[in-house]
Structures are given as structure tokens and as C-alpha cells.
Amino acid sequence: MSISGKIIRISEKVSKDLALRDIADALFDDIESLTESAVVIDFSEVTSIARSFAHQYSLRKKSSKKKISEINMPTNIRKMFDIVENKYEKTKLIEIGSVKPIVV
Image (cartoon, rainbow, N blue to C red):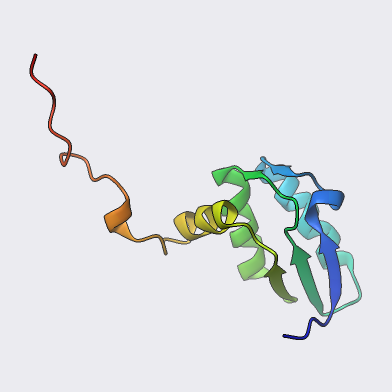
């Protein structure tokens, strides 16, 4: 796989712990100001992500005119993106009512 475009290492540009919508917005404001039409976000060394960051990142990526791709995304980070993008298998989530109370 060849990587073309500006590479942004998010752990250095933002943080290893991605938490707030405002941070995702600031990241995308910076991305939109770049002259390159393609941007690669490198998730190396990112250790955690909040649902709010992942959701805002996904929204901004969808509305961006730039071609944005990701590399080196840890499994736990990918799962959070899958959750906010409704790609996570529903069978892996506990449905309300499927857990029976323990009677003592």
C-alpha cells in the first residue's frame, strides 16, 4: 500500500488520548487549511479515544472535501469508530432485557 498526501501523526499533533469534540474540530480545521488534497492520519501510539471525539471526527471526515485516510489504528480505536458509525455487530452489544436478574 502506498501512502500519498500529508501525513499527520495524531499522537504528536493532538494527544495519545483523544477526548473532546472541540479537539476533533480543531484537528479538522487544521486539515482543511492544508494545501494538500489528501491527508493520512497516523494513529500510532494513540491509547484511548472517547466516543465524542470519534463521532465528531467521523462527521467532519464525511463533510471534508479532502481525501482523508487512516493508518496504524489500534483495535480499540477502530472499535470505537465502528460503534459511532454503526458498524459494530449488534450481537456483541448487550441488548436491554437479555440479562436476567439474579434472585437471592
